[in-house]
Image 1 (cartoon, rainbow, N blue to C red):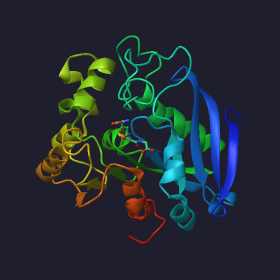
Image 2 (tube, protein in one colour):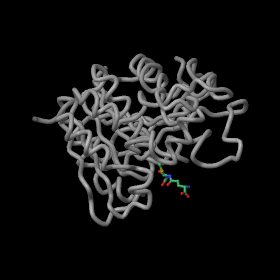
Image 3 (tube, protein in one colour):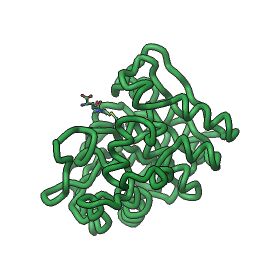
Image 4 (cartoon, rainbow, N blue to C red):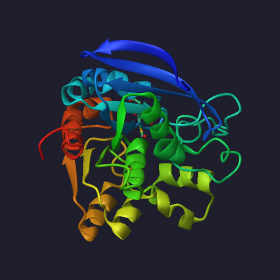
Length: 283
Ligand SMILES: N[C@@H](CCC(=O)N[C@@H](CSC=O)C(=O)NCC(=O)O)C(=O)O
């Protein structure tokens, strides 16, 4: 067993678990959380991968979103990775700011020094973690992907680029067009270098406009979000969906901000959306 369990709590007759493991891709020890619904005691279950935002660890979503009750009802596992590599020797932002480096891996494979050795979060989420978890835990290979803000960007990019590995994509308040917002430009320059041509593979609005989507997409964006529209650029995703004819529902929700109160308000709808495409609910 290459997973070391750190903690366990009973939750809606299922198990809220936390593990650590040595990541070969990230070259460091990582922690992540998993919720196993009660059905996982007797059978393998599909999983929703949740990618969190800037400053988060694997604990924010597990403790704030209130997703476990519906996940237990549906028979859906929740896999909640950390947001960056961690530990001594992992380079951070030189200024120690919250939007780059530790807690801000942006789900890319870095090519620039001193980040390239550890900041390989794209491969960690797409390849290493599912392979590990499907070998060690009662999970099927049916997956969906979702996330918030930086994690919404990660979910959209990873889902769009890996349509054979997921059944559906959703996002809350995603950074839609990182090539053209302050958070994104800082991160993509730092991890990938100054050439914007290298950023396109990690830009959901550009990917969606160019290739459309083989997967259904659900996005919720609060209209009282302090980062909307400057950082999130939701209008670019709306335009890309329209242009490509993708099966994308992008909802603007009056009064909601960027917080986990917003996520908690709509997470049930996102879980039921994914459950339909994972075969857990009638279409
Ligand atoms: N500290 C920053 C804002 C940090 C922040 O709002 N983080 C969000 C995600 S933002 C995009 O990726 C978050 O999820 N925080 C954790 C939580 O539990 O709310 C600032 O001061 O502006």
